[in-house]
Length: 598
Image 1 (cartoon, one colour):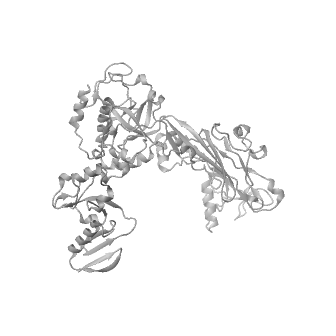
Image 2 (cartoon, helix red, strand yellow):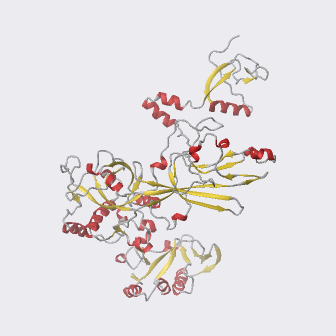
Image 3 (cartoon, one colour):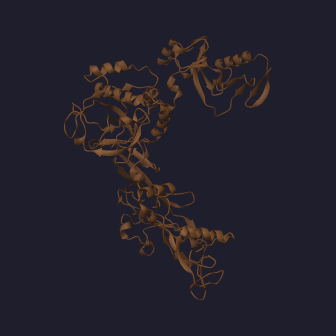
């Protein structure tokens, strides 16, 4: 007898397992059972699992019987004439949904050519094994699988038009590409899903260039950048709220007066209007105020003394460190508690610069290594200069043959004025591509003679050059660059604060220290590791820290009352650690080399 489990609950037993499973599947295909029912027989435990749980991933497959698929040519013609639809195919028992558990009992063929009598199902299309992002990559079946996994993340980071109403949205970390283009070589999924493009078609030459494109870096043509290649706009929102506190205290969005503005002079507030908010199209630089606000000091929040309620401190929203922008739009509203909310969106025109990140749809990503004037770049006999020069060493180890195929077929598409179908798993005849290039008057292997831009002499090697789709990614060097000479320090440790947004420093660990030692940068190390030095008075007898006496404002040992203390220099972090240990009833003490002898 075989146990039957329905959604994790035992419901009965059956004698003829195969007959029971076949009957259930027949009823599901005839529409007597819901199409979402999962039917799995586990022969190791001799249990039949019936599942209707919500949240399972189901995928459609064509049913195969005795080595012959049920989807016939007449069905495909009826679909093209709109006489049949998807639901009709399911109701007719031609296609069925199966879950991951049921797939263990199936033998699925990738294509109709592979069908045998043992097969139970057939893939609708081999590309169905990919998700929506992976399926739009041209020639994806010619790339290594680990590269394809990277492409999924790369496409999510590509710039395009993420929403049609982006002007009315307040979203963080948003960039809009100015001139998105549809790819020349694309998968048919691109048109089915109706993707909005998120990249540009560029001419790429595969060759080294003066070492500027080593380690995946790219060399860009300055003329292409000037014409709009990779140009985008970066949007940054700033928000401020007028909060109400106890004791009749509240924030006030206004232009702060001189008595509360502190170190900020009038030039920081020059863009604010009477309501304390910067006007649209105002050009703001680093540390300039966008929304002026004054708040009551925190220690007054629980006080109810009216005389002290006048005291205010500045709490304005300012442009972030090393950023600039133009005020794009201003939104003023009120939340459900009656607090006034002001949101200001700034925009910044971003032109590609050294350090910005680009990627091809095959997992070949890299940053700009150099932007070269057009006249210095190599050119073809027809005068074409590449937009991007890509390093040939990045191809063999990554095994991205799809990259080379897209370059070749992209060239054919440009010369013939057609879009090329590069859908994965479709039959691509390379011989036909080569013949087409020959007919168009080019070498069949896609290589051309390039001439040196500086000398005009032809290069010794033939260069592989073609057209490919490139994506600009959201990671730009202007959002990453960080520098600090001096600035804020943490109150507790007296060491520099962390984080780029706060104007903080980079943490130097043991390995960074070793690298600096190896370089012989001893003075830099000395300066880095003494940023929080402090002079403390140590008792030479017992080694404890001295404290200031009440009567005589002089350091004295709290344990042995010794007044002859020795000043030594240690880091504030060490002093803090020893004081925290003392608070835990431990007695850390410093033993001096030259002990004081009476």
